[in-house]
Image 1 (cartoon, each protein chain N blue to C red):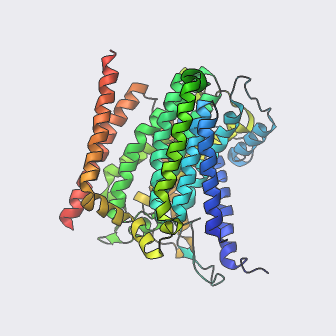
Image 2 (image 1 turned 90 degrees about the vertical axis):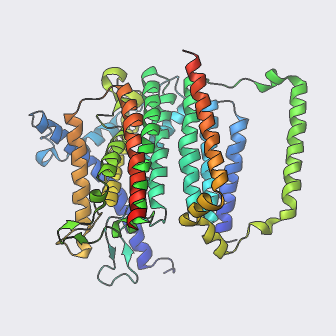
Image 3 (image 1 turned 180 degrees about the vertical axis):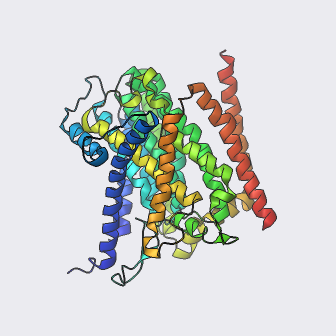
Amino acid sequence: MPAFINPTVVAHLALIFMVMNALVLSSAFMVWMERKVCAYIQDRVGPNRVGPEGLLQPFADVLKLLAKEELIPQSADKFLFVLAPILSCVAALTAFSVVPFGTELTLWGWLPEPVPLQVTDVNVAVLVVFAITSMGVYGIVLAGWSSNSKYSLLGGLRSAAQMISYELSYGLALASVVMLAGTLSLREIVMAQTGYWFYVIPKWYIFLQPLGFFIFLTAGVAETNRAPFDFPEAEQELVAGYHTEYSSMSFGLFFLAEYVNMVTVSAVCTSLFLGGWLGPFLPDWMAWIWFMVKTLAILFFYVWMRWTLPRYRYDQLMEFGWKWLLPAAILNLIATAALIIWLG
Amino acid sequence: MDANAIWFFVFGTMAILASLGVIGQRNPMHSVMLLIVSFAALAGLYILLDAPFTAVTQIIIYAGAIMVLFLFVVMLLNAHTEDDMGAVLGPRGMQIGALLSVLLAGEVVWALKPLGLGYFNTDQGTVSSISSVPRIGMAIFTTHAFAFEVTSILILVSMVGAVVIARRQH
């Protein structure tokens, strides 16, 4: 057996495989949850035919999408038209790679050195997430442009404007947490939240950075193009926005990217503000369950908000982003910095 | 040849080919995309130099923010092909351009030659000291504070200028 096949390498490969599949599966589960929660909010039953409680509905949908004909508009820029959904998906799936979701494991001594539950630990992880999220815009913008249709173009333009506007607040909210933790590594940020105040309140950054948490969550919703900020695909005005001309699985890829992005934003939010995998009662090797519970809670909040709040107007979105959220984020950053210096 | 050298040639070739593509083909949208590829390849080179912070900021600022603006402008203009530069400049203009680019290439070679290739082979200690985030922050806000502030004012001036130009049309 060659030397590079050893338990550590196998464990890392298994981790990559698991994370990829978990992301894709969780986006399928999110589709189900979205339809189910939406149905209950609107006093309906929701999908209940395929599988128990309709749980297999997303898989049926994917099978249907795969069987559909792939259409490419004649006047489209073919290369970019095909590239756009791939870009979206790659960006969405890569961003999760630096998110830690559990403690270091040796699998009861099987592994010679402990392997952290995380695809890769980069010392600038927070910035990596930020960079990959900002690359995700290209998929949407290119889809909008290459379709050569006015609805798509408008959707793409809106998306670009929206993401640039909210990325600033998003970045500043990240910066406040980075200052508190004194590190850019997500694993170290989670570790910095270990412990309790007065034996009951966990030392999570949400309690130190409530405004930062709110800004991050809001900007995260805008970044993932979710209601009430879902302008790129506002169906009443833009048909379906940037993916109007897409069909079959390339449409499915956009869908997948959108839900995976939601999962990633929630996971990053969990790591930054809710103490990641830290939590009481569970042994170390099961700590990832806390991570999943917290991430799921944020995801549920997203879905809940989508079916509760109506869409803003476009000018309101821009005004909110630039005149309220950004100044609030800057103030939060300055206040955090001042407090850190004052309290040492 | 070690893995680093192979990656260096991969990213280097990618950056050069993409940059040639930016000026070589006429679709402005494809030019923007190729420029992004070129920036991404540069980020790869930074990672090889053990400077992940520089690499990530390269992606965030150049590939992520500035190129989105480029894309935005190209989309709004909705130009599907660039003007034929030969027709704009005329044969004399093309000749002068060729002469200038040869001069520039010569100048770059002349400027870089005394440094030699060994100049880029810094040892691990120096490399890790310039790539650490706190050190970069310290350098920017103490040693180079003046240059940093001047740059900020420069950007502010251009922003104010853009606002003035945009408002004048009303």
